[in-house]
Length: 414
Image 1: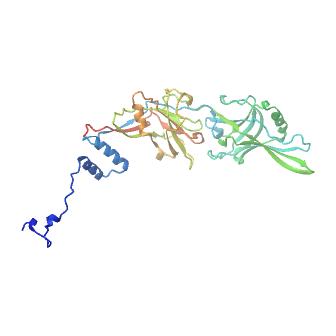
Image 2: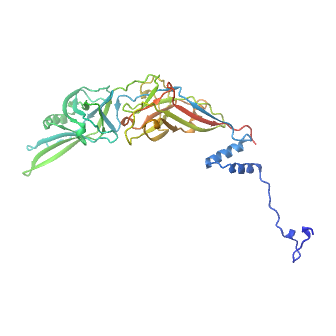
Image 3: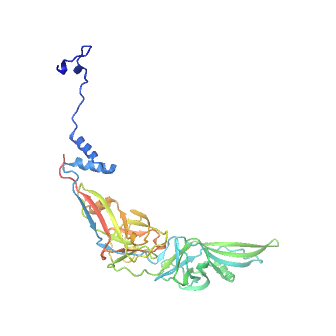
């Protein structure tokens, strides 16, 4: 019996009782998106990117190309002999030598009109900087006046030393302090009355191949004294803060030539590394998938001390520069950091490559018509408190690379 003739007990056919169909055909674009979703993109970003490309035309994802670009210019430059950072470096390390200079704008003295005044001690104290290792062997440091004025623009080694006020083996004291003979107080009184009579003060190493770090802006000169108050002997101390300080160090060796197989980054000389690449043009509608710098470390790079790390900072360079540039002043770089990588350390061959992801938009900007592309500048934040990192240059057999991945737009559209 035909299905349509079957009736229920109340006289209605089963076919008549069925609801009206709501079927609608699935649009082609929606079907394509459902198929794409079934491919299992690994992230939301990947799905959106894939959807965008699929909607652009029947050609699918377009073609992806990858380039490994080497610098066409590279060098290493120093900010100069003066260092105004948070750490005062004093002493020697190989060919590097550094001195710390101080200036006292005003003094704090005990009451010099008190007939019972007796100076018992004069001491220079400066906290060690934990960012620099304390010497492991004997290392003598002298504290002296300078014969000429404190000058932050002076060339190394700076003003000639005058009167030696005291010295200490820095391995024996913590915090760092130098005892000065109490008899020097008569001269201190003269300096306080006429500040220009004291051109400056200096700390410098005189023995051993060691380098110490002291906290900048924290030096204090303490004067201990006895005096009688209401018939009782009292012992007091006054302190003069010495916030005006900086270090002056020897020129960095070897000096860059523009044809070096090794680039020096960081270290006591605060070397920075400028790099320039000529990336492939980014066609309109293309997607930049990757922009990664691979810095290859030379095998002879110094090993970092245990648990010591440093932060790498990348800045854009805005002005033209040459590989013959000798100082950082000739490199016009942004003050703001473009990207950074924290906690870098070289402990051996396992750390032979440092990978830094650059903003992908940077490649597009560099290749745009009329764009400024003078490259990037690498620096180590407070790098002078750590060992230097030696990078392989474009003259080496395994130079720095900029890896770029670009996907072209698909041909045609729906």
